[in-house]
Length: 256
Image (cartoon, rainbow, N blue to C red; front, top):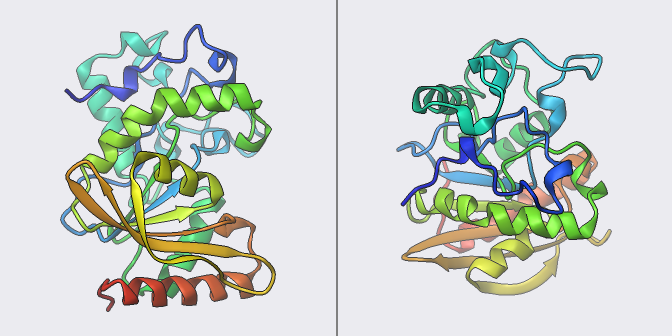
């Protein structure tokens, strides 16, 4: 049975409790899912708290500029949200890339340019690409600054929600794993049938993996790389996009 992630409090009472920004409603996906237009999904770590904050890093941006918070629905706690509240929060995150009022996080700006280098019709705006994070909650600190014990708790508790999202994707959707941790987590969920071993993308040590993965009854094309696109220089982004396109073409992925 599908769980309502918008009301999730699984990390209450755990080592991760003080890490989570509880006012923010969890974001299972950025962009609408499921979608008949979907070709690929980018996989990252967790939503950045910056996406909710104003220019001075203070709570909150106006409701039309961000994803939902509990107080938007005049509630005090996530578990008080009604089905109607959750449905509205889902609608708002589904429209993240399409609403002219939304202020995209710089992560997505960088990824949108990168995706166009792989295929000119791969785009968050067009709805051919959506984004999924391993962890659905924004955190009080950057993911890399979270203590290891709390990070493990977050990943463990959110795994069922992440798997639920993957199960809703069309079979053969391309999973673009943006960084080392998404690669390792996907490996934990199923067996990656690599077409080739992990290989260097460029001489500066950026490495990548590609192949197919079976998760439940569905099969997905996989392409991942060891460093987040947002951290790469423009020439390295071009190297990576060229490599990813060739790897996916060799797996039979059709491009425009």
